[in-house]
Length: 406
Image 1 (cartoon, rainbow, N blue to C red):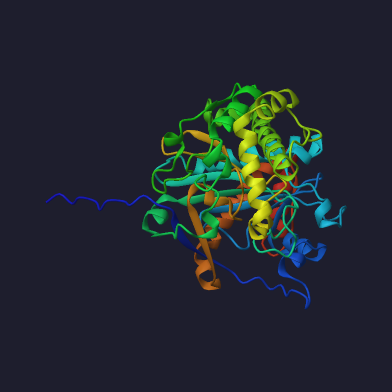
Image 2: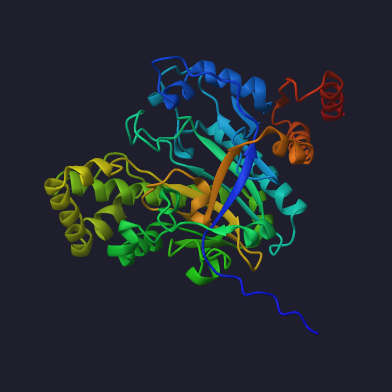
């Protein structure tokens, strides 16, 4: 008798990921996210979870409050040593010094290539890498503000089987607001948004991707966000031109966002300072009636509704991802309003973190093996040195340093 598999319902998934409770006490009188942006907390991040640090202050670390049991790490541009003001730290790639960006791109390429090597089957694993905007777009004490206001990237692998077995997520979950379905741009001026990208960006390695092909079939996300396929896939990650085009996507988004909300804030405002594509901002946006009509509607709504006005992210807020679709193609996408605060929401994955040290220990050894191997490859490529802590033994550090020098 043939067994017919049960039909998989398409929809966002909510998974449960255990973590080891963090032995950090927030000082009395401080909000948690105020403390998390402090020098003291960043010191703890290095000592308890740091894996590798470069001379450019790029720190690879494991996620203490993790997303995944498979692979879960971040690189943060740890400027806490030299910039004490949390609101004065670089928070996106366009603010990185050139030498730091060069190292940053090489580290990203090595880690993404490792994930693709270890998880070659798109049916078995969902792979993503990307950053979320950490601009000073909300007061530090507002709900949903990023816990560390410094630029950092996420590298995550989810088991597709775990996602298939997971319960469907609540569509009203605040961490499912950025997949495209709630986007102001997508709802009102998608044609202007895409026209601006098409005319402003000179792309050779990235090509526009069909919205349906870009979706993860299990979750149905992203929901209409502009997407681009990386021509030549993983091989393109070794080409510096790709990383420049990846930055172009962000620069185009920043120009569009700043120009739109500049018009919302001030009627008939002039072009924002320091835009990347001034000719196209002037011709495609500031002379487009649909663009300006939509800004007028939002401005009038802000005037009538204080709660609505307070919820707007007046400065550019985004999440930008590289991920693998169901067909094994590498896709780039960028969110449009960043209401939520979870990088995984773009692909329809909600992570429910639960403090459970015993459950964490069951997969910790295998997780750390993968992170140690990534660190070894980064050291070998002269991209940093190991951080020595309770997860890194002296003899292992000596072996890695010796291997890197031969």
